[in-house]
Image 1: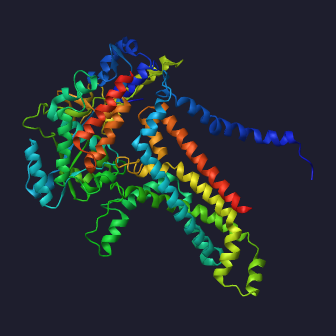
Image 2 (image 1 turned 90 degrees about the vertical axis):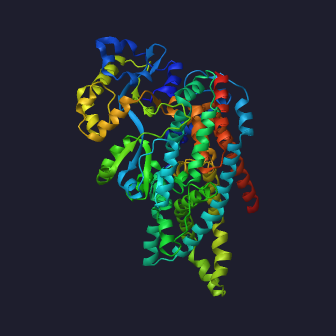
Image 3 (image 1 turned 180 degrees about the horizontal axis):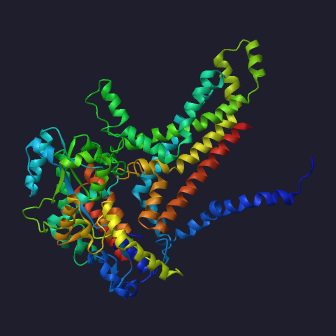
Length: 339
Length: 289
């Protein structure tokens, strides 16, 4: 099981996973899945995994009541976003809740900023080595913007020590201390369990754009499908495994996933959606022109780690934006030279 | 007593020996072998000669991790052991209170490492954690300590948690050794008019010497190969500030899929821990003569 992308590619290159293209074409099983979900498991013309759980979008969640109290509106551009942060700060709130011990949490800001500044091509070209570089302008500026936000006091004190796995970021929302929270839509499912009362004053907005940025404002960071199941090439029971995966992707499974707050990556899943919040998330995903898969899942593990390592340095200001970008680029060059 | 044949002894030891060889001994030469390759842990192995070792020697993060390990060794030897010894001496007298205290002090050792780490992560939570809340309640309202997020503080915060967990272990060790000291010795010294301090200095401490040496070796090796609480509390962060050799090895081998480089780190860790414990034991044994 993987999330597609770079890590799955490592197994494909090592010839460890079964080519599922034949099985998918049989009985039109392929039609069951949302195409974008299968796309991250496709290398050349062949598919090596199927998505079993949700499409995910990283969204900027916010407390509507706190916005009202502080008299601020949803920002559309980065300049407006900064104004909102300053005003929230003046009103005594932590503008952006974040727990960055885990590093992939802070990475979400970085990925959105790179997309909004340099467009999806900035990352895609760097990752495919088609004349792009992780040290190019968009990556350096993304780091600069993060440090500008740090200087504004946008993040909670002690941000690099807070643990997302223990919900230390959400606790700040629950305690009325923080106003915004950039997180995958699974946060909605978690909050529904932990503190459903807060959902009355809870919504999300699009990540702001830069006036000189190249990114499409509908672009999302996220994953078109999670928990990608592959079948081992060495398995003697490949048929049984396929049978099992068909069972995991049938109507009942889809219904139950949706009930759990998970947008199953199967066609027609919108029919089961009755929760308006989930419908909004579904629409955001549906309207997105491009969904940027998380860097740490898209990239080969070695480069992904270099990226994650620099993230804490950026938020803690122990590394400059240039150094951070340079470090990832160096690791990328090392990786591709060895190939 | 019936004499047991050597074969019987061998047969009884065999299962343990097999498991020990398979999981403890065999991986050492294997890691040495892997450290000469570029390998993902699966798929093709590419021979790269000494490349991993050259990289390791010049790797700033590894240096930092090694230095952090030494800090941990130092603070364990001179933090854990004296406190454990003091507690053991206090608890050696058998009263109702010491019985209860013994049980309470023993609790940290009964919890799993991950539970201990999670507990401390809640204590350290800068916004809602026990420590900062307590400091604020007793008047330091503007004091805000970022225990795990501040790169200068993170390692020490982690070491406090580690010490808290392992003090009971050494306490029990010392307690058992103190209980083994015959009462007659103290009676005799009392007749000679020795003070409490002299009792401790000339009877308890010398007789505890072998136990203290054993405890020191355990603590030394344990600190050099330490992993779990650090991994859960900070993950070696922020930005490698609390990285240890073992966490760095794990990250390379299993997160970056650089099994060859990870093996080189593992073997370096083994060589360092082995050298230190052998030297330490040699030095202390010399003193025995």
